Image (cartoon, rainbow, N blue to C red):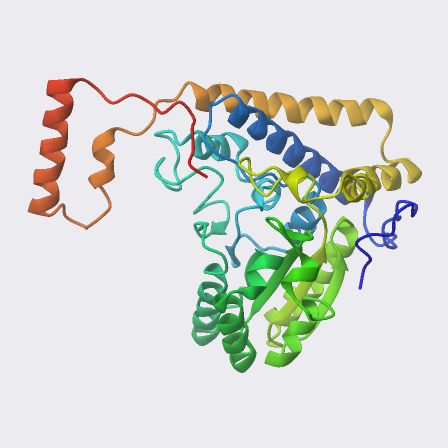
Length: 371
């Protein structure tokens, strides 16, 4: 298994990338930078009380961008966890649309401002099913969708993403069981970032790896360097091709690391050793890709600075737009419950609006969040 400690080791180079074009590597780099800039800005906004919550993904960008490169937005479906911002960015979701969701504005197209921040859902440009907070629930849902596609004779693949902690849930084991029996066209992507909140991998499983768990269900598994965007793209691409050709599911363990806390409500300094963090910073996926691009003379200082500046400008614009957009009206909570509003809900809506008329309008929250 890829070492999680290896203190003092030299930062690893990327796997052989001769078959990857410079323009593709630059696209990966640009999307990884955009992801990091977006992610860091959301943390700042949460600390300022302008949004209520976020789940940082810094350090895991290669796993997201490499996997996204294997998704066909026309035919495939995604059932993600709550730390895959980079996949949405790489698959063409507009930054401003993602930021509307983070601010829960009236222009949040996916959940209409009703879902907690960083729990995205998109209809286009990719089939992205709404994220839920409970661990592992998306896994059997993904398998069910893959089975439906299989039964209909459709050629798409379903990707489901989850963390190492989710491998301890019923959803993981039931989903794997059904997928193995049906040979469903699903790719299981386990982002092993070393920690399930404060629970380390060593306390999460006694197995040699998470990838080996597929054997019990007749599903091949593999361990991948999740900080190597080229390795991730290659492994996920092979798994997707296998699923498309009727070969069945694959379980991939993408070994990576989260630099920040589990969420904006978490303090990782309480349970994580600083030396471990320092070592994983040396394996930064963006810096690794930078070194390869420089070596191939595909990236110079001026281009690097321009890419970072463009990402910041893009995020700043998205934040400006979302921050100036009002939240959904309070009466919208009664919409989309039934096809036609029931008399009971209509009475409740009218009572609420009457209270608002008599006592004044609702005020926006100050950014506090109970988690």
